Length: 265
Image 1 (tube, rainbow, N blue to C red):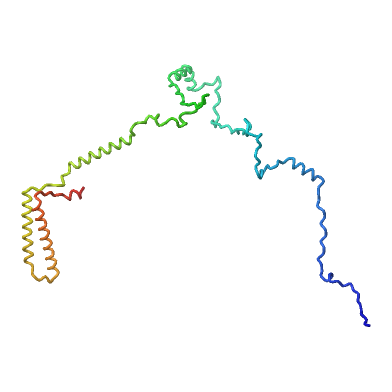
Image 2 (tube, rainbow, N blue to C red):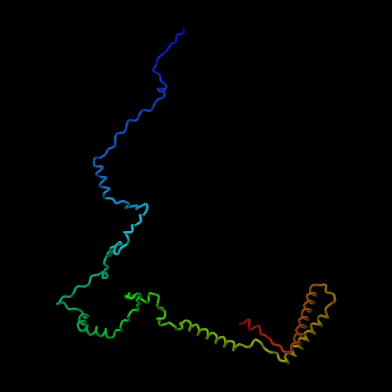
């Protein structure tokens, strides 16, 4: 039979890990004895939905339709009076003091006669055009309504503007000036008579014979550049003369157009 030694101790696994110290409990909040009274007073002074309004606007009931004189009324704000006279007027002269020359002249004026004369000589005031849109006679201004063309009442309606008449006068003067200048100028196109035509044809043929003699007197061998240039120049002159002679012979009526006048103009 074995003997077992049993040891009793206070060691526990839950006591191995250290626990944080417990926090002391908070004291209760302070509440005034007038708290409920203050809340009731503040609620009684406030209106519901006064600042932000309703989340959903409630629809008015059928009995709350708009009646006469039930809408909002706004009071007219009185503006500060505008003073036209900034400075002070001179004081009224006393009976003993002598007034100026202007006051003496005013004494001799009869204001009644002057007013009667103004009224008699004044032109009568024309009635303003109006129109009535209802049978009870609600009148409105006719000029601002758009029913009457106001431009017809102008004194210049139907008349030619002054700038157009001025422009027309300038154009007519310019045309007359051009006609006078053209009349003073010489005609650019002139007709050649038969005698001049015969003389011109004779002179062209003489020039052709002259160039033909020079061309025939050229050497047969053109081995240098000046000889080649001279030969080509003579050939061009002969061709041009032959063309001009043929043109004059085929056209009995010839007109000459002056290019110098055109360039000068």
